[in-house]
Length: 357
Image (cartoon, rainbow, N blue to C red; front, side):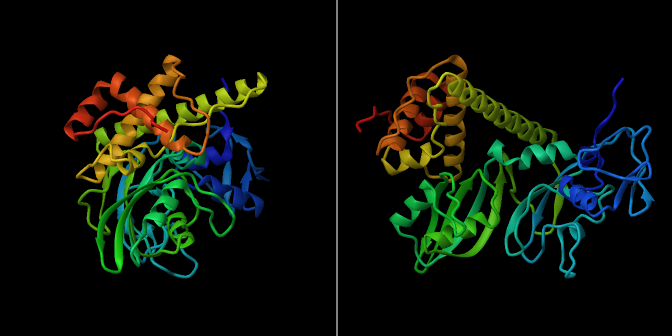
């Protein structure tokens, strides 16, 4: 029976090193397997092979318990397990946890908020994989005041300083005072300092940045510097969210491959900013900003259900008003087909409207 797995995966799953760090140490010649320098992707069997780092043997656990923790990262901490410059790191905040935990993704030193930590390498890699488009929500205080044009640019996607064009974001105004505006922004990418760079690209300075959600996981009232394990309900929710994201990516990849084989263009992914478009068009006026995230999640669920059922009439040519037209089509379809959305719309006095564009 074959029990081998790639060395990066094994060390990550065992909570010893991240996959990236494993690759770095392999390139430096610091990891050996049975006395010989390891190669990237080297298959190993934890029952038979002897793995050493800097000459010191690694003892593997035959059965490892996985832990999933949420941390409220304060400002001033770097998201690393150690720091060459001696700066405070998130590892210091979970030093008393019984096993070694690793951060899932990162928050820059000057940012704060929700950070997940785990010793489950597969969980971390699925959550961080850029193609899975895991949504992350931030409370962003910017200055000076944001104009309508700047908000539209942020929601539509902007070109960053390195030439990368971001995907559409969900952007809502939470509070507006002279000289500053508090925004709620949800993105599904993870470029370095992306929120700050997006704001800079449209002429806004970020004064404070706090992550409040990762998928369905909410920071809530957890205080800065504190951590706790995810509840069974939270873990179930994030796993379900991740599974849907993976299935969505695999379906999209399958559709693209099939379209290429048939010599026709692949269908575009559903618009991700339906709630924002509805709000701007006057179809929905929600009191609680967090309801926008719920609405977008419900709309996306309807899209997934429609695609699974083979419904394709909402695929509209990408014209000048294409984003708006797709949003309205989603809205009409959701209102007619999804009981949960119908109840949501009823609670918030939303009215269905056919596309007039």
